[in-house]
Image (tube, rainbow, N blue to C red; front, side):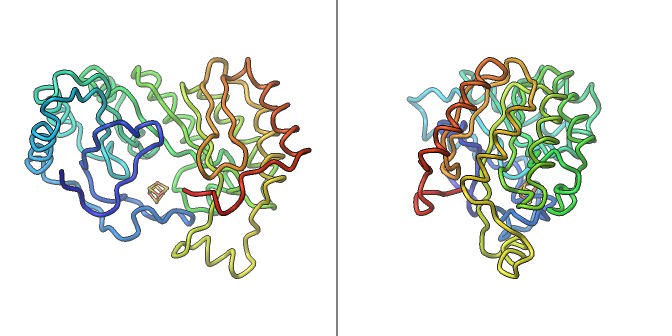
Length: 290
Ligand code: SF4
């Protein structure tokens, strides 16, 4: 197998074969993100991607590959005919594959027509991970996400209309102390409007080399402590209405692991948060990671 630079994938794709369809992120502008800072974005040559698939097949000749994740940052930016070609090749080379997934930036989802997304879904692209980060427009502007909450909702609903499974990621603490309330409540509004299949929360960790890190060091951005992160999470859960959505906040960056299904487990998760706050039972900083 060959990979260019560091490769990232959602936590739930830990067991998937990762194939780089693009290198880096076409936007690479978010103030909190250090993932692809070292890469200049490009779409890879399709023949190179197919070569990777063939190499992987040789490597996994006796192992069934059930899941394939198309990396890097936003595979949905690739032209639909090229994506369809790669999906076709995946199915030819890995006939046993059960799920193909990728990251999708809101702008790329909105750029594709309903028909294109439906065709991709029917061809086998089943799941899209979209980074919402925050449902608050001021926070989205501050972190230079390049999309508004209305566009996030539109993109999420578009995935639904195409029959795709969607997993949305948000970041606790992204609004700092100033936007804690708005970040929580407006994020709940966006999720309630989309009602995706999955929602995941990471907790902000400022990474050297990012604009947000510089702002934090300069005192322009205030990081939340664990107690405040949980206050924010409480507000989010109290305001979200997304029946049946599987919720996970059990990433290494989170101070308290939480998981459940909206809305049935909301009360239970709120009690867990209160208990953790009372006991001061938070993951120590040295054990947190991205
Ligand atoms: S958060 Fe996503 S869109 Fe923003 S720079 Fe990182 S990979 Fe690109």
